Length: 414
Image (cartoon, rainbow, N blue to C red; front, top):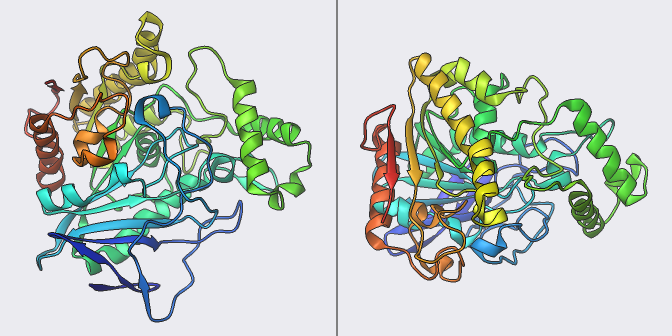
């Protein structure tokens, strides 16, 4: 199956009832530069394998999700698209932004494969790669303005707006979903004033760490200076250093800046007052998210993924995830746009991680194979709960209603 995009034609691969177009470039960028349209290509580009992940070190969450060993490259700005093969349309679109603390992850990981959701929901599903770590979120005068990874996401949403009709998707029925850093990115786009209006119509915020406020510009520049100190170079050298050196220094900086029970990475969003507000919860909530319908929730034991199941991690879950979400829900309701809330309580018996951060993801995407070695699951993925979670998500994407009263909370249990 061949599809025409603005930059050229791509050929996908059909498996069963779904056709996948993988590793489709949506932008390109120089190191520390803004994203720009990809170079057009002649002929037909084979889109049968995900593009490389953004350069990264091992995830902090390998202990619960399991390891990934992705191919990596700075030339990483690509999307993956799954659509039912049967002619129909236009179909609603779900765009997913992965988590990973702005330092790890990839839309191309098998964890986020969109085939099951596309077939079950009769949807077009899109996953996105964006720049991470210092390469995506460093702010330093004369080097990088910061928030480049967020600009990548915004560019990907514009690509969807301009190209998704060619894949059978409806650009006027786009839901953007994100987990963890991906959800925080969506919240930032709802809080800022730079260009996200009209790019999506519904939003799903999964485990948003909204207690982690964006860095002030001054603090971000200070962190950038500390990064230079770790590297032992001047700012001008950053454009030329090998990626491996940049990543090693990033990891060392994370070690030096770590604090007990702190989940904030060195490089993250910067409150520039345009793309990102200083307090995204208050900014987005006060504007009632500009009328964007929102489904949002947490897992019961978010912080256990980082710190284990104890009273201290329960406080982190409350402060970083639960209370900011409830504050946002309160503001949205006051503005006449109440959200649908959920809590994900299921966990395998005897798990030391409980219903931890990321545990709902296998149920959202529905394919057990990529998750078979995830320690947080203990080899379990109850089919009835997969069906329920997918039915609720699909109902929201297709109809703007997950199936419980707006402004109330639904709990997902065994």
